[in-house]
Length: 561
Image (cartoon, rainbow, N blue to C red):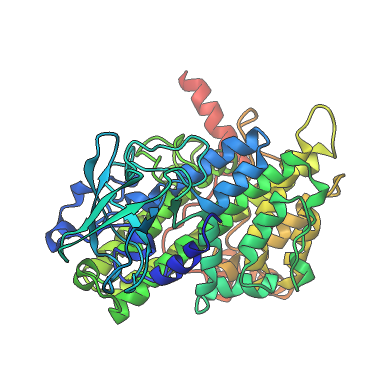
């Protein structure tokens, strides 16, 4: 990190806990009460309209975009600097005053300061409490609602910094509310830092000690800093160091190609994934308790945290109807749906946005409405459903890449074995703690098959079975996951078709009961008993298409053409 003071400033802001829109280094400036009802002020995140200004934190996907470019060019040191220091979010200047402060000044106090090439007056706010006698202060830049240029100063660890809106390197700054002025100086390219990065998100997850989801991961890896340990180990091509051996993976078995995939995917599917869940949980807690102290938060407790969760999920590059833009979780979910034939609002199409994204955004919008209306139990139910659905893409990815790696049979000149095993390892790390909570034995099957290796010995059927046996425990259904679909043959791959929601998860004894009941009383009664035994919820269910369905569909299409 460029400055040790960053750690203290982040702690002062309480990154993981909503105390209003000024969390995480002024990630959204305070808004007047009426702004809560002017949704058009804020850029939509797909079909979701934020009620608070979260443009800045949504831009963390731009850090990932630059990181991926650096990794692709094998500039791992640069990518790691971006992981640690960021470049697009929480832009803040470290200013040295000519004279010490003559009074205490609280965080959030407005600052006017010369900025840009013409010394125009820029604005910002104090990023952390400053004490009488201090000569070094942190001033965060003001942000806009424009996602393409949300802040005029973007430096941090960026290889091509944007400085057109940075504070000038020396001048006079004013605290208009205090009637105070101070002269200052700083170095533009080394003392413009960022208070939010993927490292701060990874480390901040340990504040979620009361989260049931975080507890599963902490228990599995034996560490509350597992997110940073995994990413750092991949950056350095070494084995992870956990007290629990079940979570250990040796990334020294990979070269750059494999570790590149581990870094990219674990940041999105583990760090961002947990960050989204953390903000949803904080939003619900704040709704119930009303523990906030800013104008917006007092008016609608939890709104900013809920909006923030959606911002992390979607990122700033996402546009409605354009699934190709973006690097965050939304984009990863959409990548899987053509592979598994789970696209569209019906969940059984071959193209379009993933059904899971449609469903999750339905709950994002419903949860936001419930928080605004202070129906906190409704928001809690929406949060719970989103968390359950967010496990589905992890499962899909494990199934997809276990099948790929098994089929490749090991390294050769004609395949991408290391790339695919890197992806498989990342997906296994993301899903194993959830499975372990239900069945430690099945989690071990997944990890043993998909951990880093130099030659393949993947048993796809064993991995698929290990996941499916735990769908009921994980509150996942077969029609959510789908099967590995082959567009050329218009059928599912052998042994990779969708499972059956009525029988998946049954024990051998339960299957025996079902068989005996079927012989005695007929098929309809069997289905009723099975549904009762496994506790399936009532209501309409979208079922995946079978290979027979697909063949009939293809024949009908041919006749029509």
